[in-house]
Length: 446
Ligand code: GLN
Image (cartoon, rainbow, N blue to C red; front, side):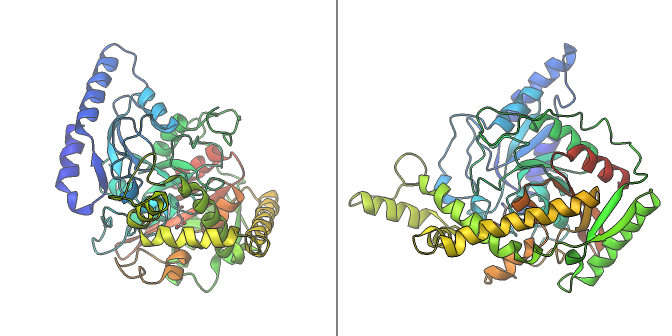
């Protein structure tokens, strides 16, 4: 624990942590030592981890990357945090992220951008950029992240680590600050698949406090890591290998797929005709849900409150106006518009219909093959500031990840190689609750 705390200090310039919590960490480490001495330690006892600053932690600030919650100390732990505490892990602190998880480069954080440890002039990806960069730089062995439209997989790809977005409902959302509730899902960000299996084992499971939590048994995620891939059917969606994809990334993905063929897999091309509508459908649905979820930040009950409000309306307007950043405001405006009378049918309802078509594309493809593979991102990590002036370009960073959230499926990003010193991720997408198989497939490659 002390070695990691020292390393976090040494690499402060990466800006991966919003809060470092040495007091909590050292207390938990001492408790872990006692558990080890008493012979009651579990597999993760004493393992240092850190949480994306979207998970509520009792007694440690939870900012969600926003000025709005810069003064917020949650009175309770998120279910995920509670489960890790019970498993004996040591919490080193809270990780930087895009404001309210809205972004693809970690540049919308109130606490400043995170830097990619492979090259400090590049973004780490987002919104779980602090988690990805901290794991990649060895500041923490493993971290939690959340993925609404790609925020675990995209930064994992750009930082060269392993990220797993579980099936929607597999991991409790209780105490995980809501962005778009029908899409948000927490998951592990680690150096390899075996570590991801160990973390998911703790995170997964039914939670009566989350009404969308799945009451489905949790398998042993490490048990099948060594299973053979003989006869595995891999589908390659033609739409994933279109002209938008950097040819050097395409070559690395093809090389990875050839490795799987050597391990006994069969390859089949599949088609998902509605995939091209995923980005517009997502930005309508996610913005609509965010405009509703973020209405709770009103300056009254908790979070930021403006100075000397003249009346209630002024209190609302100035508290929100002063504390939310530009991207969050853009989403609230888009979402409110899409939900308003007269536009609801044209935008929100239409987006929900597209969402159904996309889910059906996946259902059809996954009835023919076991998993789908492709790229995670259309390009490698880009320069800090390169896309901040162009929201559409930023939104396109998630072109390959977003559809998976609309369908609620599990998916992973695993390291597939480098272009110069810039990491590239391989995307593995499975059927509902097939996390154990995804981890097996990832582990066999690594
Ligand atoms: N980049 C996407 C967005 O800004 C996805 C974010 C996420 O998965 N949290 O909405």
